[in-house]
Image (cartoon, rainbow, N blue to C red; front, side, top):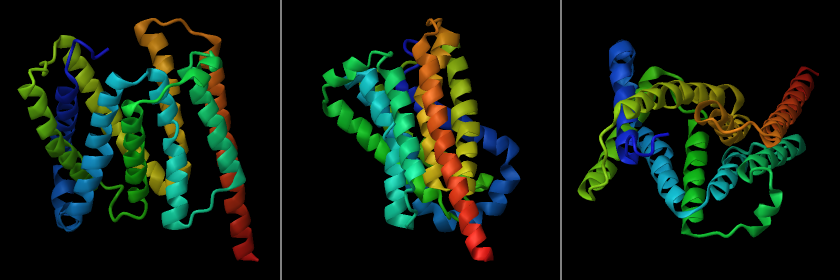
Length: 280
């Protein structure tokens, strides 16, 4: 929907600029109170915002010009698996059988929606540099997710303000490059509507909810929900762009939800067993 209405780097810089303005209006006191703690953690917070948000989005956009939507969706489905592997390596979080099966089932759901139900097309996939960029983007977001665990003040607004500031500042060189190449496009009225939506929904509320989820569930369990993104994207295309609703949409949503439910059931059962063992 944004194509022809606003250019990618104007959207990237604008979304975080609006988030900062929103935080300045409604969370000024919390940011001031948390400033000493943010200042102490600034190098790490800056890296998380620049790599997990700005670099991820930039690589995603460039990959979209070089590879297919199928490849992008499939590779995006690898992010939760990277989070699981990273949690095992960094935090010694074991990968349970239920989690592994759940991840595989959700990835199957992503494959269904990405291939438009024609799973034979998956056998004809061809990979190019755009796919490598997408994989690197997913690895960066997985690293960001893992870095949230145990981070001091991660669920506070001052911490999120630091992430937003780092994302905005690191997007400015990319915006300058887009302007220098003559590719920048100021928002049309529709572009402004898209920019405001992107700032409020995925950039502000979506990220705050995700940070809180990682705090409550841990990165491996929260990361599995990332596979809902391409499914929700397909469903939104039905609602907003007028694409027809197909059986594949229902099948993909069912597979992803079943995978998440299975993994969550296994994780909660393991937690209950662990608590019972501690009690005994």
